[in-house]
Length: 514
Image 1 (cartoon, rainbow, N blue to C red):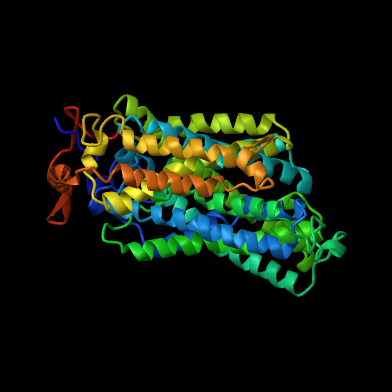
Image 2: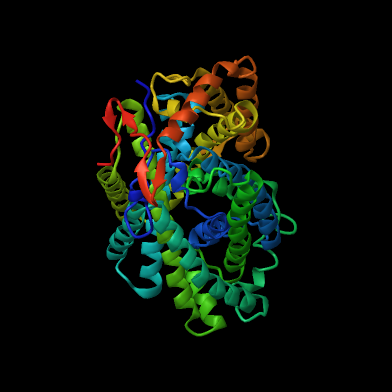
């Protein structure tokens, strides 16, 4: 029996006042209540937080001047956000979480390979965020780091459990509250109202080469900025899948690109300036000091708003982490996930990130940063394969119902995607610089890391070559049948009341949320 994606009637609409019922299921066309204009502010606010600011500390810490740090970051953001934003177009078209769609390239069970990397990234980011917030608030306000860690975890869990609409609403509110404060701080910095003990070295960048420039430091900053937004790629469509199916592709890409690149373009230069001028290595301490120099009390307000923004981002990571776990479990044993499954999964992830974040020292964040860089290496071949398949091979035409079938047209283990992924990852190794390891090619280049460029190029080109002989005409009947099944599952209005045109079934059981 054909397995249809789980759907619901309009009577169970997942509005902002209830816990979202959908998770890895296809979003019915009638429930596409998302608004395109919200995408820009959502992704702007997603990066409008202390973690982004701290990226500006990298260049000056390696002897790079503020100017070179800003240039390297800007170029990296343009490259990284370019790939990240294109994933957003998949949400409206397919109505699916990002990693479910990846079954089209890796297979029903083969998708577990990239799932492992994405899950570690989501949890890892929340561990780092817990460390940043706990240690930061303890340093600036004297608050107990353990109490803070538990408190922010609870807030993030609530946001993730309530789901898509609540996350969008929280980010929208934080955007309008934070932007004026950051604007005031920026004006104060430009007006020369902020000074610090390290100001004499602000224009020199701390040495590290003539003019405060070394190629290694420049490339480290470039890679960090590029990787920052590429790491969003596995869950961009998680937050665009409620948009109408006819959402114009150029508009959704431009909206996400502008938002996701805009806030780092603003905050990373401030972070670089703080590192060079104020000599800080804690983003919250820098925000408090600089803000209070501009206007008394501004630093405290901006610090708390920054923490709330970071907590909201933790909710985003938890939400997509839940989708990743459920996708992985469903790839082994078919699920009918409802509210209970999402609550248990998110709570389990929260216990892990909170326990790790509270049990390690701040110094651990450096080691974890290297681990996250390794996970970034694991994600780069995936994003290349996924985008090439969507835009150049299948051109957005998928049999959505078959993505939920182990016996579907995409297979259990899709060898083309797995080979392209594995070869790309293997050829990246000689170009890597992570922790104590420096690949032979990277060493020959003086420690310059260009692994992500190699991964993107090799995996993308190889996948395209391997799929040249793929006969897509054999998939057309399945795609057409899938569209008919999805239309059958849509609710129809009778006297303004929603009734189901057809009851979706999964393995012979009605697809009702548990």
